[in-house]
Image (cartoon, rainbow, N blue to C red):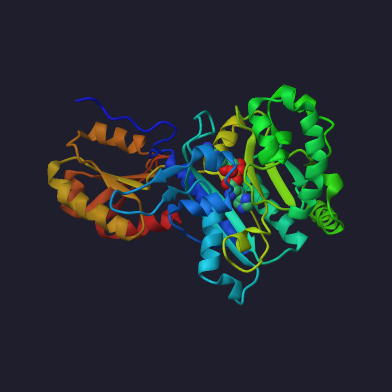
Amino acid sequence: MAKIQIPRGTQDIMPGTVELWHYIEAKARDLCRRFNYHEIRTPLFESTELFQRGVGETTDIVEKEMYNVSNPRSEDALTLRPEGTAGVVRSYVENKLYGSPNQPVKMYYLGPMFRHERPQAGRYRQFVQFGAEAIGSSDPAIDAEVIALAMRLYQELGLTGLSVELNSVGTLEDRANHRKHLLEHLNGVRDQLCPDCQSRIDRNPLRVLDCKNETCKTLTKDAPSILEYLSDESAAHFEAVKAYLTELGIAYTVNPRMVRGLDYYTQTAFEIKMAEIGAVETLCGGGRYNGLVAELGGDDMPGIGFALSIERLLLALEKQGVQLPVSVGIDCFVAIQTPDAKSAAFRLVDRLRSAGVAAELDYLDRKMKAQLKQADRLAARFTVIIGESELASGTAVLKEMATGEQQEIKLDELPAVIASRLG
Ligand code: HAM
C-alpha cells in the first residue's frame, strides 16, 4: 500500500520538539497573566463572510488563501480561520463584551490558523499564532502596551537585535484625503508597475507602496506619504504612541510605506522584524482596528492587537542559536536484576508517579546492562536497581546518575526520598 504523506505546508511536531512549544506557550501565557490579558478560544472555522467583511475582500488572504470547508448536508459557507482577530471580534460582539465592567477587554489566543500560501521556511499552510487583542480603548498607551507584550516575549526567550517598524495608516477619512494624491502619482506610472500593482491601484492603492518588486519600489519612491495626510487627531495619536514606546525603552523606526496585508487597520500599524531569518523577516504584526467592531455589527468600539507565529519564533531562536532551558529527561528509571523483581518494580514505579516523580521501567525484557543504557537514553536523574538480595530485604539501590553516588534504601521510603531530592 502506498504511504500517505502529510499535507504540504504542515508539520508534525514530534516528542523532543514539542517541549520547546510547551516552554514558549507557558511563557506566553505567563506574560499575558502579568499584562492582564485573558485567554479566549474561538472555533477553528467561522462563517466565510466573517473574513470577507473583517479581513477585506481585496486582501490576498481572502482572495487567494482561504480554506473553505463545506459539508454536503449543510448550506453554511464556512472557512478555516486564516487569522484570529476577526473571530475574537465576532465573539466580543456576540457575547456583548462591550457591556463588561472590565474595560478595555483584553484577550489572547494561541492556536492554529490556516492559509493556502506557498510553503517555505517560516511560511506554512497551518501555523500557530499567539495573539492579543485589547478592545474598548483608544488610549495610545495601550498601543505601546501590546507592542511591549510581543517584544517582551521575544526578549524573555533570549532573542536580540529585533526591530519595531511603526506606521500610522490614518483613519478612513485620512486615507480618503491621501488617496486622491496617491492616485495622481500612481496613475502617472501605472503602465510601468507590475500587474499586481496595476490592479491594486483601483482596489487598494496603499498596498502598491508595500510591493516587494524593485521597479515598483523605485517608481513609488516619491509617492505622497500617508503620514502627510494624517488628521490632527491621528497625528497626535501617533506621536503619543512613539512617546510611550520611548518611555518603555522600545526602539522603533517609522516606516511610512508599511501597509499590512489586512484591511481593518486604522492609525497604528506595526511589525517586529529580525534581519535574515530566511525568506521571511517579519516575526510579528499588528495594529489598531477602530472600525472593525462596528463593521461586524457591534457598537463603535476601538481595538488594537498583534499576532505572531510560534513557527517563525522558533526559526528566529534557531538562527540566533538560542537554547531554551527545556528538560526532556525523566526523574527515575527502575531497573531489575532478576525477573522476580518485576512486580516490585512495577509497583514502585506506580508509587513514584503518585509522588510526582517522572518514572519509567523496562518493558522489553532487557538485560541489566541494556536497562542501564535505556536509563541513560531517557536522561534519568536517578536509577533504582532492585536485585535479588535487595528484593529479599525489601530494599533497592538508589543511584544518582550525575555523581554516581549510591545508597541502599527501603522500597517503601523511596518515593518520598526521591521526591525530596528532586526538590
Ligand atoms: P498577519 O501579519 O497576517 O496579521 O500575521 C501575523 C503573524 O503571523 C506574522 O507576523 C507571522 O509571524 C505569522 N504568520 C502569518 N502567516 C504565516 C504563515 N503562513 N506561516 C507562519 N507564520 C505566519 C494577523 O494575522 C493579524 N490578525 C494580527 C493582528 C492581531 N492585528 C491586530 N490584532
